[in-house]
Length: 301
Image 1 (cartoon, rainbow, N blue to C red):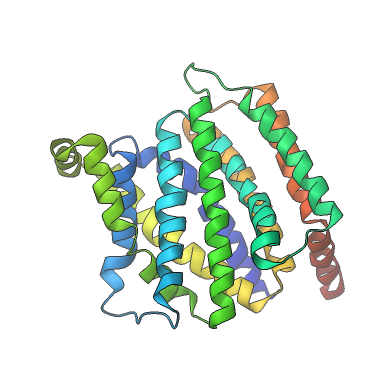
Image 2: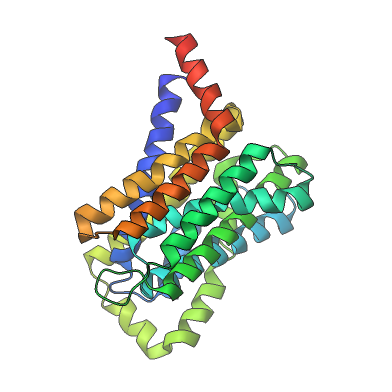
């Protein structure tokens, strides 16, 4: 990688790592479905007149928007509201890599290597350890929050598969794809917000939005959605996936640190052990990619 691409990858890591703390801030004054509606409205509506529809069939754009937008972030926002801690969410969300692995075999015909199955086993052990360490006290992760976050990771993997299928159809540009796919979750999120909280509560939340809520929406829409996903897709188009995807292993590191700094979250020993097992599984899964990355850096040095 060039120095510029390396900085882009690290910028994505930091943006996505801080993402979970920002979500928690946004949920302090907004319901999860309303936060989702505002996030994707801000990511899509200001740009529709200036950005052309991507060179893809509508089903790929709509499918990605509903899976990544409504599915992934609907489950994640609800999980964070119902007791998932920001730090553990950053760890559990990385299991999307293993869900993608499991789904890619039957749907894309991609066979997993033995090391990937070993990594999956280690991650599953870690997830069981994290799930059984839940509690109901302040700052503790709840079981329902864990299950909802795991569901969000699954929907992220579904959106990964849709994006990979779309790349077989057309060499689309990332930014228009992200902008237009962000249109499709807006109305479902609005409907769910009204169904969950009622028109009166939704209106009250909108009228009482403070600076923290507005900044959270702006961060989630423009940095975490448009900028980070566009940079990440560009890196995947320029470099082999094995050279790019290992950087995602740093996201939980930033997420756990940010949750400790901003919310004083202190995972219990069993959660630390489970998080370590999940990260170990990811390292095993990415062993070949990490070797390739290290070898390329060594040659450049």
